[in-house]
Image (cartoon, rainbow, N blue to C red; front, side, top):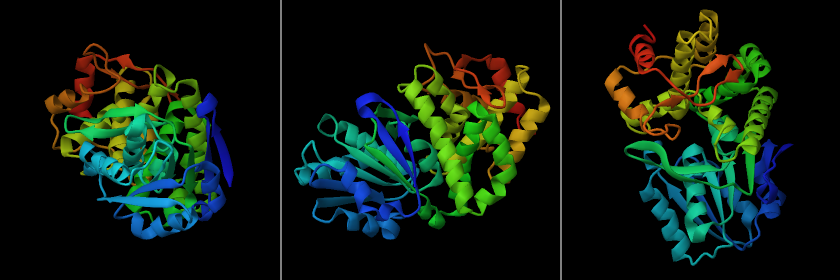
Length: 359
């Protein structure tokens, strides 16, 4: 088992990475200090792993909320189901919420934990690669609104993250590829040596070779932990973690939540960001090609869907947390391994990328 620490003073917490961690009762006991525990999961993950988690909670007053699977259920209505269970069971402010699932469950359960009685402890048990390397780390919690993704939420750190690599064996191939988009992102924004390693090891990751997966998860989490410690509330460097996300969120919102997986949308968005960076004179054509090729090797889409025209794309991108005073700001690449902070972009140049990208 590997252990990384997110050092945030009294809110610091460990990230555990290894095989069969959900069978380690000692890890649960180390971070649960109440008799009351609510496990939030979904209809895909619960049949596979809920009983293994419940077996580590013997002697606790345990309740469960099992939600339908999918991005469309990351909503206020779903969070109300969690609050209904907590209140119905008369759970106190010392109760612990466990998020057992991918990014949707982690974000939603974390948001509920941040809100219930103004904050109760919670534990992240991410069951997708994307959640293990990105959404479970850093304390961003949120639900979606029909007008914008993740626009209702809170910064709220977990007690710990249990990244059990064994659960990735049951992850569908499409979800595995979606997670690799976020792994590649770390190489692009701040770790060029990791990007080089990924170019040489993508096939090992796609075949779920344990050592390669563990290394990629550990390196990704280490990168994110460093960024979060430096800028927890995204006033500076942490915004670079959103490379491709403004484009990607527009795709997700425009197509309807769940039609395109988050990692797929981010992959397209990173290619668009790379194209715009090339137009600004920062990336060479060869750099853009490297980025496109590695994402294609990850079995990810690299061109936007035809369903969104330029006008709709711009309208959706205008609803983004990085925008200030109505001005669109994007994360771009100065080079592979170095991202910019949010910068205002020329609408004409952005429009050119949206019109011509992928032709």
